[in-house]
Image 1: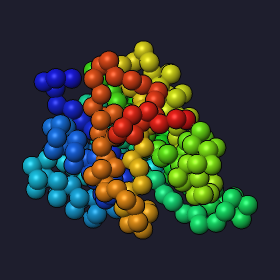
Image 2 (image 1 turned 60 degrees about the vertical axis):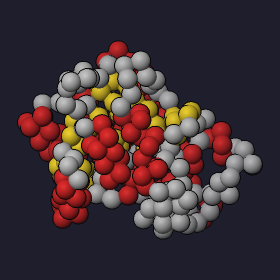
Image 3 (image 1 turned 180 degrees about the horizontal axis):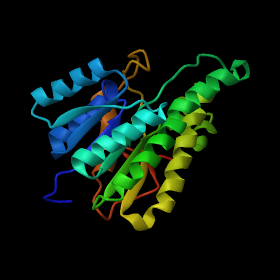
Image 4 (image 1 turned 90 degrees about the vertical axis):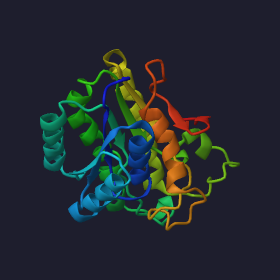
Length: 243
């Protein structure tokens, strides 16, 4: 897409890894970034901060739990830009601190509604706009905690992190990645999952060993893949992550 301004929508972009993805897409790649967020004040503040850095950034109200807000965001993007080139499904939640046997269905439903169904709702709504791109890119933020291969290995450094809802929701996100990638192989749209690593964000209580800027690297790389880049894969900044 050389010579053509690219338009990116990043959900959950008012802070943390989402904001860093927007910053790197805009600052390093000249992409116009649309910051999807539920809270208008925080979203506007984040967009204003990026604009102060010389990045073309705009707040778009988007709640991944609310079909109407997603549809309104899509209508806004279509009316102003006519297409969407990059969608980064970053919005997510972490609620549990109990082992699987002590969890409850209500909590699992809440986690899945945001982390899985929110990705599905947003992707489905934005697909008509992505189809208008010369080379659409969808990046789903996943986690090594969603890897069944790694979680089946007792030597995995996070094997003791038995958080059923969050972990399995990322496994489901990876499934969405595979199925959407397979459907869209002939549509010039690449779909991949990104593993940011254990980052110091609000979600982790700022306990992670990596910065949000480091956590954004894999997603930005996947969002700016060349035409011969991969689709239907799961990657961190070092390379493929096992399913």
